[in-house]
Amino acid sequence: MLLEKQMKLADVIHHDYNLVPVINRFGIVLGFGDGSIESICNNKNIDIDFFLTILNAFHDPQLLDKEFLQSFSARLLIDYLRKTHNYYLAHKIPEIECLIVEMASESSDKKRSYELLQKFFEEYKNELIKHIDREETRVYPYVIELEEAIQNNSVSESLILRSNEYSITSYEEEHDNVEEKLTDLKNIIIKYLPPSKNQKNRFKLLKELTVLEKDLVDHARIEDLILVPKVELLEKSLTNN
Image (cartoon, rainbow, N blue to C red; front, side):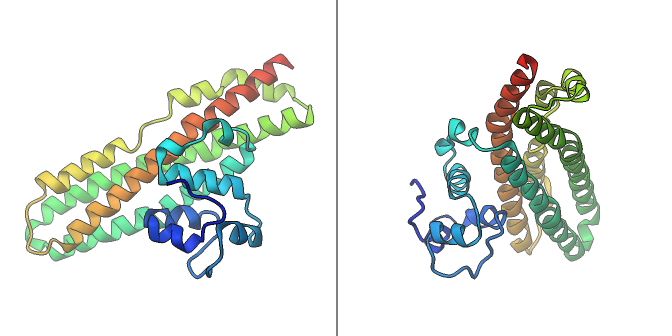
């Protein structure tokens, strides 16, 4: 189903609860009333077209409009991607960590198994943090500077050197598939973690890992299919100039 601006945002959430974190990234929190997508976006000064395109891309991957999303500024895309990073590090990762700790405390007789689970997740978390830090400190500032230089027709020699040394192609090559380890983690829980009487937290952990995994896949798809081609065009423009 294609989400459209005249729809009530509350109805959208009833239809697809998984869109709540995506909506939050635009500064819209629960308790927003009975307004339509258009009216809520207008009240919060949110680009309606961008909001709807992102929402539809998460609601149904087949609705990802690559050409249309590439028409938005790189700064707008990066602002959204940064808010996604914050959602992972400030909310989702701590939530999963708390679940693992709670499971370990309830299963003292299987302490060794849960220590291994905690260690595996800690390694994954550190890998994700490293990946995000590289994007936040190296890739995104470069992209914004590149776009502004092209728009203002004020390309510096240092930017040309940076583009030659580190193009977006280099970023593509080092763009790790950080969601792969989540599949391994899920398999540990499903196949190898010793059975316990209390399965409630185990089910909840599996659900939260699946939600994070899907979100990461969608996030990477926007970077690979939208941001990277857009930056390649900017770099081409830089070379021509």
